[in-house]
Image (tube, rainbow, N blue to C red; front, top):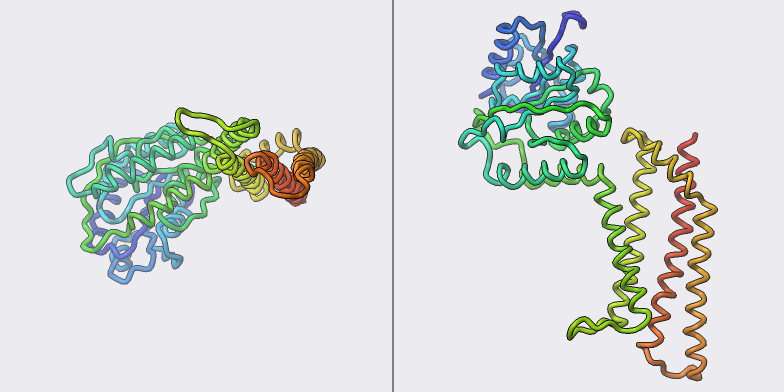
Length: 387
């Protein structure tokens, strides 16, 4: 078929699906024929050792082989081979009905860039989804995705989804495993694409072998991806919380112990609150580093704006100046503790008194070095990004 004549490409990632592939292909070709659609069906085989490739050829579908293992690798290969204006992706295990795709196509025709199926709205047949996935894993990961990226979807991991081919070409999808499902949604949202969802029914698959989905490993890969693409939640917010908690606690405890009911907080607590300051700064630094790295390598759209705004208010010279101020403050506290020791004729000291100066002094000195080094590193990254 000529490229301009194909409206819809149906892509099926496949790995040893001989028990279900023929059923899926029959449904897909039936959908194209019944609705008089110019379309194609692509089987993206991921190294099947059964009769799946032979079955795909018998149905005159387009068979491609992707040697890099993983759901994401196979799906990407299938989409990239597609010549249709719209692409609908679905698992080849017969858990979805390929004869019922019109809602996806209509939403794509009406301007949606990405359409995700929602199994919770469409119905999950008995035995189609394990209890842990249905009531814990999927709802939890979908909630995190909605919260982190402000995406109004109820089912992040539905295997039946549609996308405009031109929109897909702008996403630069890279993951190879099951987390590909999350990457597609997250990057579409970051690119401000129009995302919609439609109810779908999930059926028990027809394979007679264990599912390719590994509950804990694939769940972690999804969560890891969501965290890595949301440094605000991974680094910035925890860092701000630790910094505020540490600063308040340290400032209060420098002036003396704090009585909370029958509990007394003293220099031992001061050690922890001071540590919170250093740890919080590290988290915030990593947030800035990750946003800068993303801008340099074009990982997320719009990061250049962040880099411009940050460089406008913070630069190497200001960072060095702030670091020097912190270093001087640390030195002054160190001098004060030294003079206290001198007044004691360099003998034994009351640790409760002297530690109120020594601990903040160490924090200021260490934080000063961290600030200066961090700004030097950011300066290096910024220079690199301009090449």
